[in-house]
Length: 460
Image (cartoon, rainbow, N blue to C red):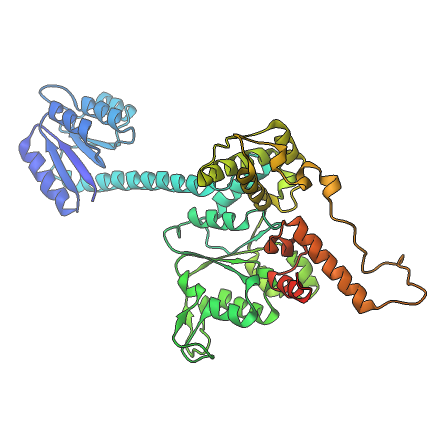
C-alpha cells in the first residue's frame, strides 16, 4: 500500500485529501506545518509527498529539501493558490515532481500526478531489486577474465527472456552454474529450478523422469508420479547432457518443447506446462546432426540462444582467484588453518592445462587442503600430473586405425587386441581422473552409462 504525506496549513484541506486518497487505496499521513512535516520526513519514507508551497512560517521548498536529504528519490508534488513562474522553476530545479494550482478540481488534477509518482517510484524500486538479484545470480560465475566478463554480460542480457538456451563447453566448465545464474536473474527466480542429467538414465527411465507416469503404466508403478517438466512448472528445467538422449527420446522432447505440454506414461490426457528450458552438452551437436545421431529440428529448437563456455586453459588469469575461492570454502568445511597457496604451487597451477577445467581445479584444491599439514598449500600437496605434467602423462596407447599399422606375420586376435586397447584407455582415464568415474567418462567423450558398461566388462 503506497504511503502519502500531505502538508498544508489548512487543516480542512488536509482532511479532504486524506479522505480522497484513502479511497484510492493509499495510506495517508498529514502535517499542518513545515516543522511537523520535516519531523515526519526524518523518520519515515513516503511514496509521494503533496505539499503547499506557501506557509506562514517557512516554505514548501524546505519540505522538498528535507525530503531529498532523507530519500534522494522522493517524489514531491506542490500545490498553491498563488503560483509564480519563478517559484515553479525553483521547485522543479530542486527536484519537485510536479506543480499544481489549487482550484475546485484540485483532487481530480492531483490524482493522476500522485498515482504517476507512486508508479515511477515502484518501478525504480523494482529495478533496484532486479539489479541486486542479478548481481547475486552472477556472483557464482567466478572470474574476471575478458571471457568471463563477456559471459556475465550475455547471461544478464538473455536471462529475462523466455527463450530456450543451449550451453556448450567442455566438461567441468560450469554449465549448471550458468543455468542457475540464468534462472536466478530471470523473472522465474522464485519458482523451481529443476536439473536432470540426461546421460545418467536409460531411455525408458528418462521418459518417466521427465514426463511422469500413471499408476499401473508399468511394473512397479504403484501410484501416479509427477514428471520433472511438471515439477519445474513456472520455473526452469535444466537438461544436462542433452546430447546423450536417444533418437526416440529426442522426438518426445521436441514435442514437449513445441507444444508446451507433456503426456505422462500410461496417461491419456496431456498436461500443459510453463517451463523455461535450458540445455547443456559437451558434445558437438552440429557434428551429431551431420552424423544423423541428433535430430536437426530439435537442435534448432534448443539452440535459440547459444552460450559457449570457455575452457579454463583459455582464461588462465582466473585460475588463482578460483583456487583461492575453493581454498576458503574447503578450509572452513574441514576446519583447517590452511590460508594460502605457496608461490611455486601457484605457478604450477597456472601452468597446468586443466583438461577437467573448473571441476578438476575444485577437486584438486579439496585434496590439497585435506593433505596440507601447515597453513600453506605447497607442491607436496599437489598431484604429480600438476607438478610434473610431462612425466606423469598417460602412456601412449596403440591407435585403432591408420595406414602405418603393421600386421604380425602370423596374424593376431583382433577382438583381443581391441579389448586390450579399450581396457587400456579405461585404465588411463581412471588414472588421470584420480578414480572419479564420471570424470573418466568425460575424458573418453562417452556417457557415464557407457563407461559403466566398459568398466564392468573389464572388471575395473
